[in-house]
Image (tube, rainbow, N blue to C red; front, side):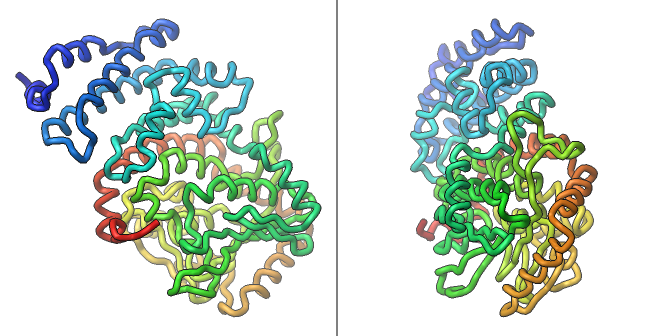
Length: 463
């Protein structure tokens, strides 16, 4: 009897149930219709075997070993299936590449069309109110699926294109903003200042942190800001926050909401939606359905972005700075990428930060949490201008005037010229393919929970 058989016996899994599960394992035949019919049975039996066990926090050591073994075997099966058939799967979900489907909708469609390939809506909902550390990691299968899609050139480019399109609600909000000169979406507020549009990120209770309550409206605001024809440059700032330590101060932002992360309120797909959505739009602009967003031919709609760092840019907000055309920072502000203390990958910072700071400083910032004071020599590799905290408004206006004095056309042309060499869309797609898989495993690791408890005291914080 091998170790898994022994664990299954100790976990009171009948031997015939384990044998039936093993017998259902499939090798890829090369025929998509045949494999599409055969593989879901193995995934169904895998799910049923897991469901025989208690919930994750109540499992004995043998039960946990069985769950880990079954999860690993089922994930390897999904990898084999997708490695062979990912283009056919994606074609089935997009009507042969004729429809654009956003990433958060794509995983739901995949669950319906290919049972067991990714968790169903019912399975996701069942864990919605579960602490992150008590979840079974079902969403790792979404990471495997998205990594295979993004790693495939045709399917991945189509998904990247889909995520660069304006959100469906952007058209209505654009009309409202053009009429009123202001648009309040809660998590983001747009204001017109002459020929400049200001996007003010707003989550004041949580130091302007990002979470599931902010992501959709933030992306819509970015869409509107970019598509607004009455402005030729955009400014990103944070709002005044409520936290007693910083009350009355503007802050750019504190990155991901770690309390919500610990509490299981941030789904895995949030990470991929963020990177393919509004963060990528800062860098590359907004696409149209008719033409792939090709930098060589300038087929996207975009405008230059200026970011204002007041207080700090932590985590995700530091990542955002790497997509900006110009960064103005208060002399007392700082930047950090505390990925080590969180146990996750800091978005696309691993792709972008080395071209600002060089490889060694980038690794120190990401892997050893090196703080970069904005006014320091290292901080100035990211921040273009430093101003006294009380003079940020004037500094922003001065920078905007300087950047647009020769017209917006030249500014857009130059950012495209930089980007086509520094970050071609294919390099971005391949990076996000790696990110999707690795972040999924990080998101459900025991290290994530241990880090949040050790460094954030997350178990004692209220959401």
